[in-house]
Image 1 (tube, protein in one colour):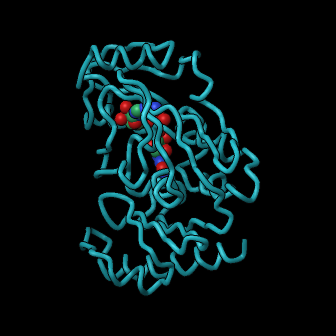
Image 2 (image 1 turned 180 degrees about the vertical axis):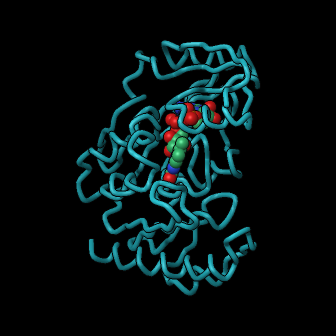
Length: 262
Ligand SMILES: Cc1cc2nc3c(=O)[nH]c(=O)nc-3n(C[C@H](O)[C@H](O)[C@H](O)COP(=O)(O)OP(=O)(O)OC[C@H]3O[C@@H](n4cnc5c(N)ncnc54)[C@H](O)[C@@H]3O)c2cc1C
């Protein structure tokens, strides 16, 4: 299928993108890798009248690239999943590159971006789970300048975030090393979104679960039974509550074991 008609705008700077978004209002959407937005437009699940393409922004080095600053890792919003997958992030942040193998297929990873995943806010998306687990800060630029939003406050529901329509994510900051972490998930076919996913940090004794609610679910335990038993789940076609709870239990146990071996 083809998308409904829209007008294309190419931003050359972050400030220019923000200006366009402010001027065009709710009918405009940022276009990054297009791997979620264009698919939704083709299925007519999204019908923006204007697309503001930020992939040609050249004024701001922070938009693409990965930089270690002290304890923190700064990942530019336009950094692709594949760039992170290929980066040598050392033991402190290898969880980020390891997790990328789970994101769709290679062609998707070469175009899809970190900022796009976070803004899209799918509750099973690897970047969303990692951001919540590792207390990431989402840095957004709007008409009033830049602000930092804690990942814990960012995700409000499927495809619904704390971002204002005239804000652009410029980078995601992971503030501290996370050497004893692991992400494990299950999907029916390789490359599909996971039915359930668990990402564990043994140093903070936390797990974040995907596929069990409208947003990533953070729990202050890494004990598989405790994590699985307290979940408020619903039967879905092909995935019963019983099945998903068992899956979560297994995934948490595996993630814990893998994190422990780091
Ligand atoms: C077949 C298939 C399988 C996939 N499997 C997975 C998977 O297993 N795990 C996974 O996590 N993802 C998966 N994806 C999605 C993929 O990761 C996308 O790359 C990602 O969700 C969106 O990134 P994007 O750069 O393509 O954003 P786009 O599609 O361009 O945009 C997505 C949304 O984010 C907004 N947006 C984008 N960038 C910004 C920004 N900087 N500031 C503000 N708003 C912004 C857009 O307006 C839009 O609403 C899959 C996609 C496909 C097609």
